[in-house]
Image 1 (cartoon, each protein chain N blue to C red):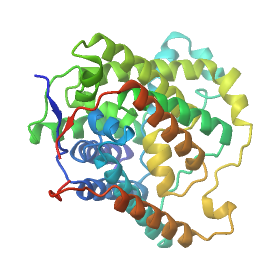
Image 2 (image 1 turned 180 degrees about the horizontal axis):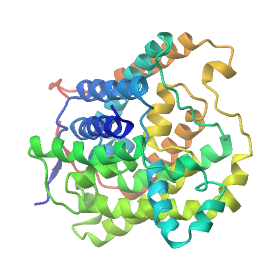
Image 3 (image 1 turned 180 degrees about the vertical axis):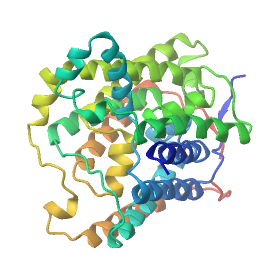
Length: 178
Length: 179
């Protein structure tokens, strides 16, 4: 069923933030800072390797060993799927749905538009993440945790273009549960 | 513990945290980017402060594993812009896209498929487009205190102050002082 208003998150902001911050500290202490988007390139590399392995081996990017190795980062992404599935189940929030409250407020109940925008959006997110060598996890969250210079220009344009696009795409404001 | 097991455990905690914290919720992300619902912003602010302080403490103890990305300034600006457009269009980023897919969102599955397509196009255009871009304004794998006269501790204090200011600025108003 479609929800009529934006639901409150399971955890209050400070509790969610502390939890995620501690996961980051655990990752930095035990293995490697959090990051997600590299694995999409690794998955594609696996498929490309089956089709034309010589192309992969000669490629300046995916010819590198780190793009051919299924390891820590790969299992981190699998873990995200498992952890979120569990988290949704125990809060009784696991539910099949095709659209969002904000999308319906402006664009109505049809899901075709949401799917089209979703595909294009996902395409741009990963393309951008690779130009930036990281996404909102690896470049933004881990970048600021490590105080890296690269996080500064990335954050700047991500916020400007993210806010602009959201204002253009989502003109009507739905009810938001306080 | 093997790297695979460790990755899975940290990933599972991260995925659960993204969901419980409300970041794996495109409505919360769009509410933040539309400057109407600051829950996600406040969660992210605390996430950054705790992550940064914890990394700093680990660093002082000599226990931090750094993975600093190379600062190709132009490539970062373009990447941030493209990611920002996709983020503002969908409310998903790679991590929350996967988490939302696992929570039953079909539109997140479509977005994740778009991500695989985006990664493929990046591979194809890397030699001709992305690699030359990376050579422009390349400052290497540096941290802020290594290229400025400002020491590490002052960066940490400064960012804590800025994020605290953001938290005060976006504090919930009205009678109910909950979220």
